[in-house]
Amino acid sequence: MRSLLRRPALWLAVGLALVVAVVWVVRARGPLVRTTVVVRQALEQHIVASGRVRVPTRVQIAAQTSGLVVAVGAAEGQRVEPGDLLVQLDDGAERAAVAQAEAAVNQAKARVAQLRRVGAIVATEALRQAETNLERAETELARTSQLVASKAVPAVELENAQRALAIARAQKTAAEAQQAAAAPAGADSRIALTAQLQAEAQLAGARVRLAQTRIVARSGGEVLTRAVEPGDVVQPSRTLMTLAADAQDELVFQADERNLAWIAVGQPAKASADAYPQAVFDATVSYIAPAIDPARGSVEVRLAVPAPPPHLKPDMTVSIDLTVATRPATLTVRSEAVQGAATATPYVLAVEGGRVVRKDVELGIRGEGSMEVLSGLAEGVEVILPDGRRLAPGARVRTERR
Image 1: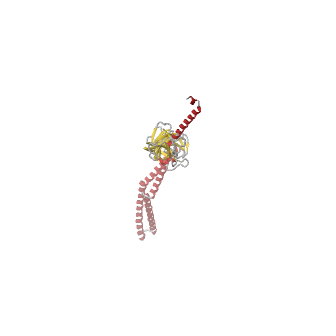
Image 2: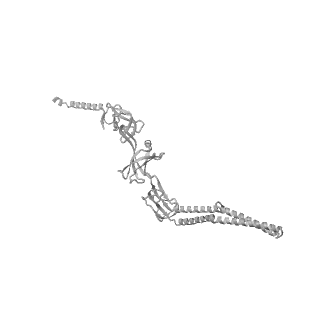
Image 3: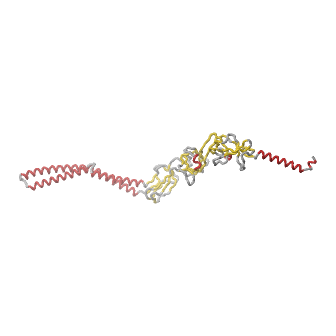
């Protein structure tokens, strides 16, 4: 023993040999790698996005005529019902025009009534008198003709009688024409009725102009903006108020066009307003735009909210978690184990018999932290979680399951 202690070189050689042996054994067994196992479990694919509360019907309130504002009946944030006064313009001139038009209508109606009641009677009596005068003129002509023939009166009397008969016939013709004109379908009646219709049309126009001075809500809703005050002089087409008309609340967000294949009408979602993140409510996809926005490469998606929370307001920012696919029990692998997932040939490095084996896989839906495996792997297969080292297929490895 003492001789061995006196020979340190020998001990150094033995130690070095042991280190080499250990290194060789470690290298023979391969490096230590982290692994996971393919498991069967429920998996959901989600699209998480930021959107806004959409106002389906945004009504711009404007005046149809110029005028002085004398009253404003609603403020910003106030709810209005159909028929509620929004803006009142000075209507003095319009009321006077309505009164004048009503007087003209009454006058025209009186003229029609006069023709139907008095005019017809007068025309009938005038015709009857003309007929009587014609009979008298005919009788007088016959009597005068006999007297002239017997030379009892001069011939000039016959000419007078003939002239009187001609006048009587003309008067009868005029009376007949007057009676026809005074009839319900006669010319005078048609003229009077036309005048009445014209007066009624002018009255209707005056009432419309009067109604335009009173701007009311056509439907229920909430006042979003107000840009008018009493004393303002407004012009046609100037926006005075903006209303969010009553309609089912909707959310809207821009989905990346790469996700378009996964989105469908009827899919459920969870949403919350950024101002109230704890108040989560349900929503459902109700509309997918038919065209892509070329500038942003996105598609508009709308979601209906069947039971909106009371704090939800127009244009409010919301967070949306849309469930686009669900698998109740499917083969899954951790997402970090898949290499080339965005390419056409994704693969994983599995461990079989202590050696690295490349496995090409077909992927399905992608959930939170896991991906669906449609083919290429079986349940229970151990796959490597990459850590930056390059592992060649066939290399020996030691596993540490995570």
